[in-house]
Amino acid sequence: MSHFTTHLHDEAGTAALGAALARSLIPGLSIHLQGDLGAGKTALTRAMLHAAGYQGHVKSPTYTLAEPYVIQVDQQTIEAIHFDLYRMASPDEFLEAGFREHFNNSNICIVEWPEKAEGALPAPDINVFLSVSGEGRDVELHALSDKGRQCLARLKFAPNL
Image (cartoon, rainbow, N blue to C red; front, side):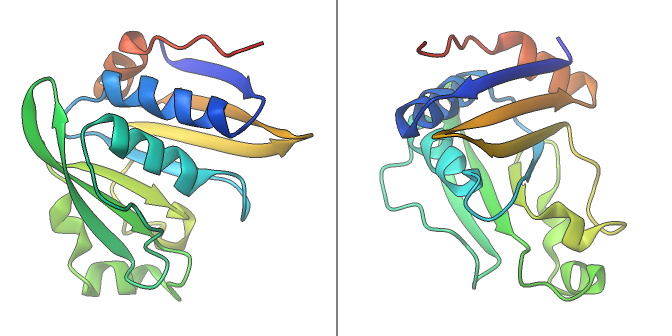
């Protein structure tokens, strides 16, 4: 599967999608989250990380730019790095910060505001588009690599109607 769309009626729907994504993660994935402020990018990431076994507080890395988390994927302990590039002035800042070294075959990198590092940021395996729709959110997931297609093929999610 290379494309998935759904409507999330509420915050519980966002949490359920995050949990479903956590069960379908594959080491080495790069996930780009796109959407306006308040579209649910951090909420989706928080739900995914908690469902993947992270027990602590998951905050938006708006000021730190990156936050690492240790999670479980297919009974493997791996690092997930949550990036928020909203405050970056140019793609050069991404390179100067040394963030590119985190993108490898074992880490999972989740990037909010990827357009801020366009040209410097490695290509995503999955693009996630979130948009506010009434009281809920519309979500589109696009797999852009074999690894991304594997992840979406493993995704088992049925929205609450």
